[in-house]
Amino acid sequence: MVFDFDGTLAELTIDFSVMKANARAIARAYLTDPLPGDSLPVLEWADLVAATLAGHDPKRAKTYFAETHAMIQDMEMEGARQGSLFPFTRPLLEQLALHGTATAIITRNCARAVHSVFPDLDGLCPVFLARDHVDRVKPDPGHLLAALDKVECSPDKALMVGDHPLDVETGKRAGAQTAGVATGRMSLADLQQAGADHTAQDMATLARDLARAGIWPELKL
Image (cartoon, helix red, strand yellow):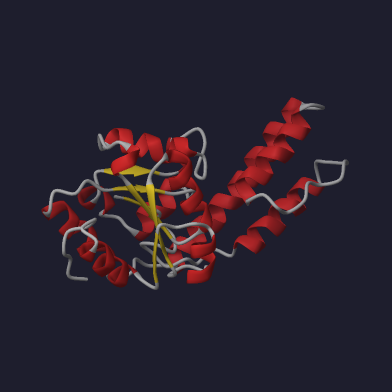
């Protein structure tokens, strides 16, 4: 079982619209060309701006990239200070481990922010891959596949659980089953429209449904 973090195992406290606005404000100081549109998530958007800058001035591109990522990490750390784990997170991971079910957590967030919210993560989940640990973050399937490789699980036997259509996309691109929980900012309808194989309002309901389907062991959350 592979889990997203923010909005799935912990409260989602980051305002990504503010983060994108901040990234655009930084980019305006570096780029005279029109800025890219807003269709990309902020990390990919910043990569695109940096690549555009690199074609003219590689040094300025590196400076822009560093400044933007420092802003992103500052916002992630502030979000971590305001956030907390969902009450079910520790029991969920403990019970899955007792049943011999391998687990992993993957996130676009930075490792420092996640460990700030979940300091005992390493003792409860054997594999944790944050943005710092991979070359390309989800929805690139490589992020999920790297986690599955560490737990020695093939994609066809894996379940990717998250609160966002990006998590569903990640699982599908990797060849895994997908489950969406509406504990972030996306509705059940959003997750269903994204094509999640299983959806539930919260993790307790999802666990119950998956146990009935024989996908998860019976858990008490």
